[in-house]
Length: 105
Image 1 (spheres, one colour):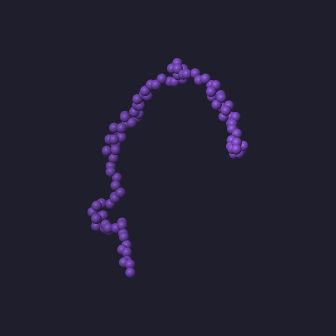
Image 2 (tube, rainbow, N blue to C red):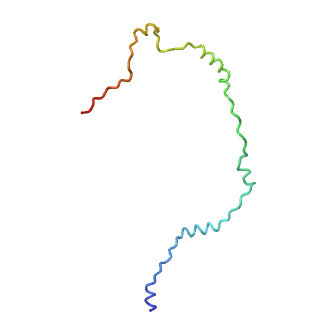
């Protein structure tokens, strides 16, 4: 009776990964030293707020002159013909022309 039960019981052999075992062994053996504030003093730059930006000087001095010259410029238009002659010969053109559809039979 015992012999039959032993024959049916099977076990797998344990497979080991040598590389992961060596890696875990080395990780356990490493001793990390704790960091202190003195270690950071040489490696970290102290914070200072950025300087305020300055406006370019060329725009401030010439801004009023440019504005005055813009106001004094003559107004240019596309139509150069006088209004009286244009009204008499003006033909109204339709810019949107839709064709009517024929009703379906």
